[in-house]
Image (cartoon, rainbow, N blue to C red; front, side):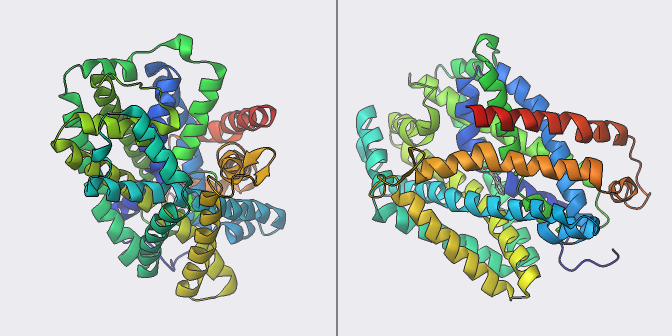
Length: 451
Ligand code: TRP
């Protein structure tokens, strides 16, 4: 594999782009409320074990598969074991998963974009500190047909524009600007939150370990969150892996991404909980924490609240944008590799398809709520598919391929950059990849089916 068709220009660019993919709504919206629900520090501890021992291993395996093969997921499996073409189905499963995740992700991202607008116009501010009015506003917004559709469209167009810019000029350059902006925004919000009166209780909530709240369900949630947050289990990291420069150290790159992703999730908790506690609001707000509880927090801050509200929803939107970019890139690159269509055609096609499906999911909150699958609205159905079934399944097959099917000398050769790097960690990695990770994934899948 001497030449690389497309690639990031540097290790920093690769890390920024992959951190951009990993850091998303999962960190800033999902992590804080899940952590709050399952015992704060106790959950955090379990999460840290999972993310470093299992998540980073999955990420490395996807990077190795991508960079070694220099192909998008479906062909990657086929190239690495040409005698076992059946494994290409894992790539197909990954692409299908990315497609559904992006379609659902666009809906949530449309909401965050809409909230930036509403915060800036003062609409959120005008709701005052009446908790019921704030939740009603969110309900009305999310079940409406037109407004979420409009913002979903705006957000999708932004994603499309970056993809049309290309791998280096689009994805890499945008990530190099947006990731530092994201860190800055989150730090500003943390400082504000931590200096509010009574902020200490929020810090305590996040870090004090209440093991009695950490049920088996909590442990599974931690594992699910670790996979979701690192964007593994759908082949996106295989595509980004194929863009990692050949001279980069895959182990270090994956570790950096894992550390950054985890830090940002913890910072998000520190930006949210102290402020929520300081205002005497309910920290266990669940998925509605960001849209129903935080506007109240901002309104309690008085005049400056508007500024912080805008900053917060911009932060969420930026985080969502770089994740959505990686999903659309994976779909576009895979399609183009198989059909030889132009990048523009591929990007437009998947932009159109995922936006259209996203609109259907968005409508399923309101006018299409009577359409159900297994008694779930379409949105809730795809949410279940995307969180419980597809990614763990895809991750399971990918790690089995990496640990048991891919020739071991190729794995070592790729991790060591043809023998030029030392890979003392390899025996541990191999043990985790062959036994621990598959077993953990199996538990997640089985318990998901039984739940
Ligand atoms: N990691 C993203 C987040 O934390 C969500 C996500 C899951 C994702 N799988 C992905 C993003 C694949 C991009 C690609 O919000």
